[in-house]
Structures are given as C-alpha cells and as structure tokens.
Image (spheres, rainbow, N blue to C red):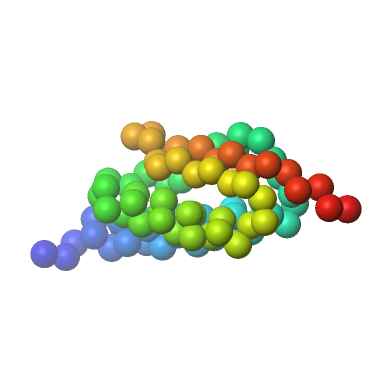
Length: 88
C-alpha cells in the first residue's frame, strides 16, 4: 500500500543519503577534525537509518584521515570523529 507517508519517507531518505555524501566531502575538503555531530532528518524506518549509516561509511572511505562513524541515535544524530590531516 502506497500513501503519502511512503513517498515522504522516500524523499527524506533521498535527502539524507545525499547529505551524507556531501558532509563527508566537506569534512575532507575543509580538513575538519574532532567530534562532529550531524542531525539528519528524522526517519521512521530503521532500515532507512541503516542505509544512511552505510552511505556515510562508504563516503568516508575516500578520506586519507582516520574517520569513525556511529550509527544514528534515536534522535537522528550521527557522531563522526575525524583526525585532521593538515597538508597545507
């Protein structure tokens, strides 16, 4: 059964997946280090939360630095730790 809730959840998932890619890219480009907390749009489906987590893990693989990614909390927060590279 498809309703507005389904299409809304899909749209939220698409936005969060793209945000994960862009966040990983910006952290790398700007050499941001430390503890970063990302507040994703709330998702009701746990499998979608897992997809966002997997997308972020995949996106940070391109980083030369050491990056740690936690799964999304119940509040939709993801903790990322990143060591700065400092190649200027």
